[in-house]
Amino acid sequence: MREAWRWFGPNDPVTLDEIRQTGATDIVSALHNIPAGEVWTKDAIGEHQSLIEQNNEGLSPLTWSVVESIPVHESIKLGESGCQVFIDNWITSMENLAACGIKVICYNFMPVIDWTRTDLDFKLPNGAYALRFDQNEFAAFDLYILQREAAESEYSQQERKAAKAVYDAMEEEQRSLLTRNIIAGLPGKMTDAYTLDDFRDMLARYKHIDGRQLRDNLFSFLAKVLPRAEALGVKLGIHPDDPPRDMLGLPRVVCTADDLDLLFHQLPSPSNGVTLCVGTFSSRPDNDLPYMAKHFGSRIHFSHLRGVKLDPNEQRTFFEAGHLDSDVDMVRVIQALLEQEVKRKKDKEAIPIFIRPDHGHRMMGDIGKQVNPGYSGIGRLKGLAEIRGVIKALSVVNAYE
Image (tube, rainbow, N blue to C red; front, side, top):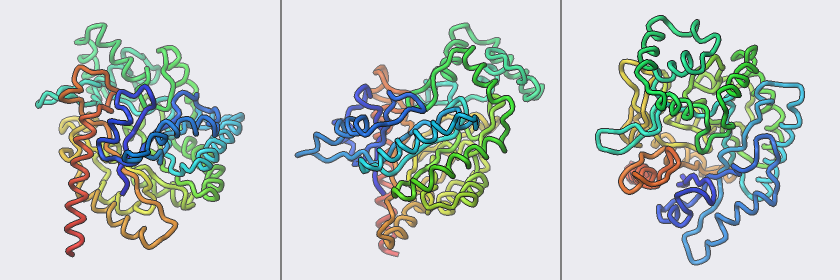
């Protein structure tokens, strides 16, 4: 497996020189300055690629190997009549990336909002800070800040009561912070930042889009993209919906093993794959991650190795735990990925699985510094070291078996 690290570009507080010191060899990055739906030109890709790779002489080399992500325009998700131009632009961006030698692309199909957290500074008992999703706080936003029209009917009386208690206990600044966390755009999100009114307008566009229609729109998009991806040797890895369930009246269709089975049955192209985000899938208790890593092994081109701890009293609430200290049996997940790597060595056309530490804790010297939420340097370095140790130990054990 290839150890990778996400880099947000020249403004990332974690520099390329610092990434090189972690021992990671591959960079996961994107052209965040280009609006969704526009073409990534070869010149723009080459310029970004040069930033990553031009200073490799005499140093441990870094290679831009994985794109995370090319945004999928909302018009495509909505299946609007004019969406073909955005599909064509997406394909052109993919072609230009392939021409530059970058052939692993992560993307997602989440409508309106990307990955979502309610708390970006959840203090852990050891003094470090983690990302957290609190279901009652999210419901408080939905019911009493956003005041979404259909929200009342989607929550039980008990859930509404709990959300109201949370809302009433908040100061105005806390309510504003919660709103910003949910709709203002986190680093790495592939959707726009919204005002509250803009957000309501975007939700309204999906009023008549249910899960079946959204899935059909995903399949239609991929039916046009995959033939070209296959011809180029590009591997696509869809990222699961985060959190993996319907939210704000919006359907989400990449949440479970059943969702992936349906996706790969409908579109069996070898270029059609998944980004195994262990933390995202494991934030719903009915997903068995060791099973999924094994079952979908041939479809996994990229993996985010992190985990979460669910609240035993409200399992839609979770915080992002240490990479080896979560509800996931990460050792068994990594074992399954290593087994898949062995199988791929028999195929000269197969690519390695790219892995990266994800959403590290803000800890030690990163506390008080500017960091992108979830992407602190020290927390991810700790996660990478833990993952590397598991891989090394399993590799030794497997060699003796």
